[in-house]
Structures are given as structure tokens and as C-alpha cells.
Image (cartoon, rainbow, N blue to C red; front, side, top):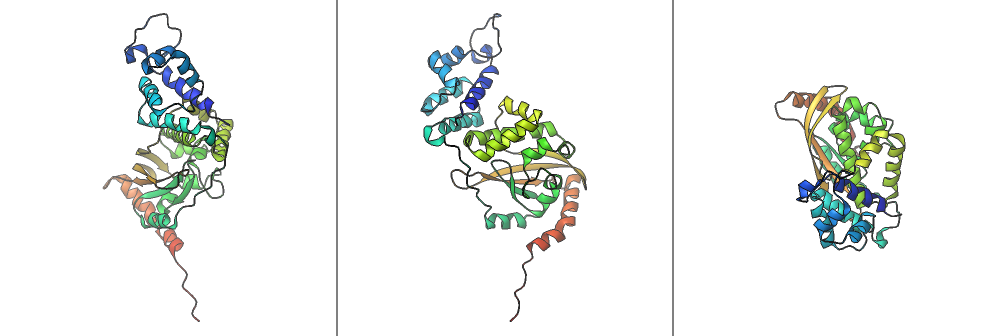
Length: 298
């Protein structure tokens, strides 16, 4: 297995979105395709046209970081896209090409304790494939349509499966298209880090086969590593809420990726009142989950 197809589509998509005027090159009415030509990118990066053509065909293994930085500068890549290009280059090295099924890293008990201690924000932990591997009671209650969805596998919800394989996601996520695009962009970033992970490839293959919309988003090759902003949800029990969400990375081993997300309402807002209402309804369930059996007396 190799990642040359990903390299080709990424570089070609970024070249196509630029115009000569944007990068200070002359233009003419005779251009037959949108975007920059390969030879124009080569000039901007300070490399030969033949070399750049070879790079865009996916032959990126062994290319120095300095040269990749020059290409990134020529294509006006942002910081996330530049990091993604470097990930593609690392993954293309022969020592990284063997397809593997990565060892699953379980959620540390201390992280679950932290999640359970959070009562006024919905919190959960995901892996790089967007499986939810841990959550607090309010996180489960807020995302109950996803947790209860038939797309949940072995009790583990997956954001991508829910978005694209369960029609109820369109009612739950008010800004469905924006959320779906961000979800695919997060998967693209993970595919750049670990393009040979079998489970990830299987997930992308499943979604590509079953969802035309997923295929369209995937082909756009958008990249996203940060997960933060405002999200509007239409919850079946409390109605519509608008929440601020923030994600932080959790330190793990080199080939594992977990992040922790918090969903919080603006203080004093109607959304906060609705979130508090949901939390109060679920408080007895949360207490029961945390209850430790007393030892039997001798």
C-alpha cells in the first residue's frame, strides 16, 4: 500500500484553487483550466518542472522538509495543510508503508474520572477515527441520538458513521452540511497521519461505498486538525441549543491520537437553562454509574 493517490489529489486540489494573479504571475485569456499550471508552481517553489510533476504524481518519499516548505509556500498552504503535507511525506517512507491495524489505546481510568467530575458541560473523548471512547453523563445525554443510533458499533458511536449513514443526524445537527464537512476534514487529517491504518481505511471505504455525500466531501480534500467553534443541536428532549465547543489533545504514544471535547452553553442563556435541565434529568443515572458497591461484612 502507498499514499500516492492522496498526495496527488491534495497537491492538485491546492494548485487548482490558486490563480496567477494571486501569486503575482502574468496571465492570459488562453488558459484552458482553472488554477496554476504545474510549471508555474515549480517556478514559485524554485524547483524544476520535471521534479514538481514527479512530486505531484506522489513520489514524495525522501524529499527534504526544506523543499516541501518551499512547495507549501508556493501553494499558499496554511499551517494545518503544511503539517498535513509533512505527514504525507513521512508516511510515504518505505519503513512506514506496511498496512497495520493499530493497537487500540484504552481510555485511562484517570481520564474517565475527570470526565465524570464534569457536570455542567458535555464532555467526551474520541480517537483519530472519530469513535467516542469515553464520555460523561451529560455528553451521553446530549448526543443520545448518536449513542442510540444503529450506526453505533459494539457500544461505540462514531461521528462519521452517524453523520453519513443515519438520516436522523440531519435533524439533530442544525448546521448539518458544515458539521459533515468538518467531520470529513478531521478524518482526512487522520488519514494523513496514518494512511496505512487498516481500520481507518475500512471506515473510509465503508462510507465511500454507502454515501455519495461523503464521497463528495472526501474528494474536496479539506484538512482540519482543530475542532472548536459554535454548534447548534436540536435535541429530542430539550429542543434547540447553541453551544460553544473546544477540543484539546491528550498526550499518548506516537501512533495514537485522542482528543477531549467540551460543549458548554453561554452563562445565563436559554441554552444553559436547557442544558442544566438535561443534566438534572440524567443526574440519578450518573450517580448510579459511579456508585461503588459496599464490601460484605464478615
